[in-house]
Each structure stands twice: as C-alpha cells, then as structure tokens.
Image 1 (tube, one colour):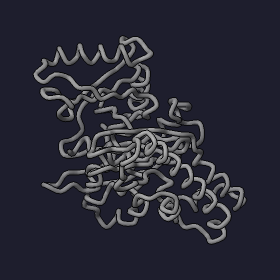
Image 2 (cartoon, rainbow, N blue to C red):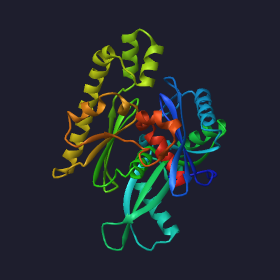
Image 3 (tube, rainbow, N blue to C red):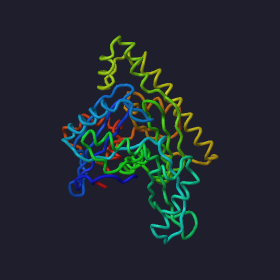
Image 4 (tube, rainbow, N blue to C red):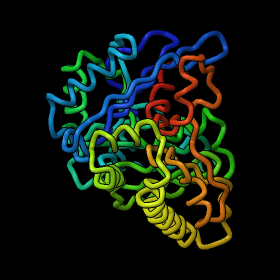
Length: 345
C-alpha cells in the first residue's frame, strides 16, 4: 500500500514475489473487459540470498530480478511486497467527513500508540475500506513499516533496472488474489506456506479478522529429497517438474505432508479458540509452493473440517495455450498475481 515510483503501462500489471527460494513474477494485461495472463517467470534463488529479515546477497538478488524482468519481456516497472513480519497493520474507525490533513493527524497519532519505533522512522499509508462499527464512522486500514525497509527494496529494484510503482504487503496481495478469483465471500482462511514460516490469515466477508504465523521449514523437503536421491540436481528437477516417483512419495513426500497438515490444523485451532466458537470456516485455501505438492489437499483435508483447495489465482483470467502447462503450479504464483493486479484493476 506504499505508493512509490512511476506507474506501470496502462492496462498492464507486473508483480514480483521475491522469496527465499525463487523470484516469481507475473505480468497481466487488460484486453477490453477481460484480463489475460501475459507472461510468467521464475528464477531460482540460493539459501541466504533473501529472507523475511531482508536481502542477504544484494548482487545475487539483483541478478535474479534482472533475469525475471527479461523473461517477462523487459519490463521496467513492477509491484513488490514486504513480508507481514516487517509491517504493522491496524484497522481503526474514524469519523466520516474528515479532511485528508485531519485523517493524517489521526493516523500518525494511532501509529504513535501502536509502534515501538518513533513515528519519524516510519513510512505509512492508509485507506478507507468501508463503514465503521458505529454510525457516521468509516473503517480505515493503516499500514506502516520502517523507512529502511522501503529504501532497501527500492534500491535493490533500481539496481536491477526496475522502478517500484508500489510496495505492497504480502497478506494484502494474497487477499487481492483471492478476491479476484471470487474466493473471498463468507469466512475464508488462507494458509501461505513459505520457505521459513506458515502464515494463516482469516477474512470474514473480505475483512481481516485473524492472522498468525509459526515456523515451518518447508525447504527441508528439498534437502530430504536430495538425500534420498543422492543428488541435489535430481531433487531440484523433481520438485520443479512436480513429477514424484512412487518411492520418493512414500519415503519423503508423505511424511512431510503429514507434518504440514498437522501444523495447519494447529493454526486453525488457534483461530477457532480465539473466535470463541460458533464460527464456521467456509473454505481453506492453500497458497505457495507447498500448495502444489501431490496429495497436499488430501493430507490437509484429513486433519481439518473446512473444504480445502489450492488458491488458483488464474481461475478468472484468460490463459493462452502457451501458459496452460503452468496451471498445475499456479498457487506458487498467488502472491505475484495479487501484486500484478495493482496495475490492471
């Protein structure tokens, strides 16, 4: 939600998901009333290049971003995101009819209460999202992060020849992807399985009501597979193609999915306990690389009650024949797609 540089081309949106294991990028184009998947790119990253705490190897990350931009067709502007752990978010109700200056004063007064850092050290943005709880009020979502996190992302993008038109927040981009896929009505829970953590977000009719994260080393599946196959290259190829041998499924994949399903079930228990009972989740969506593993839906469904499905962010898009083979791994690109919607919505 932090507006930064120049806008992208009219009717075009580019989203780049910078993650610990890969740079994943999506370009969308509006064609009349329809929106098409224009191009997709993924560039592997090595351990230590990037994590939720920031960029660890700037030169390598710049190279990966440049390669991803070239694979999309030489794009120059894009939207990227900060992890939720680097961002403060809060929903508050303001009186209706305030001037922009009055809203700004209230926002920074709220930040002074919620932030452990001086307000002067923060970059903030806010948006009215609907009516408030009381009459004559409106709900405002506030997001803020430290200046240094914004500047670091701007610098890494500029060195790769890119301009950031916006710097978003990962959970907000995933919400946008689910919304555009028409999967956000009622009570929707989304589990984003990253390389280092599992993130759970619950929306009620589109409004964020609960979030929680916990450590989960998804990257260990590659190490376990490499040990089983006695080859890092063979393991990377098997994960990338998503074509698992029966032996690898039995010895590596199934134990991993059992632990993942257990962790997801625990996260849902936290939400249901916090909600105090009486809440029925309409759907549980899975995003990220783990969401594409064979048998993951069945494993999670065996541990939870709500219907489970991968978040396919391209379900309402026009997908040309050349990208059809990418559909099975579409959940890997949920975040990048949500970011790309900023340019075409």
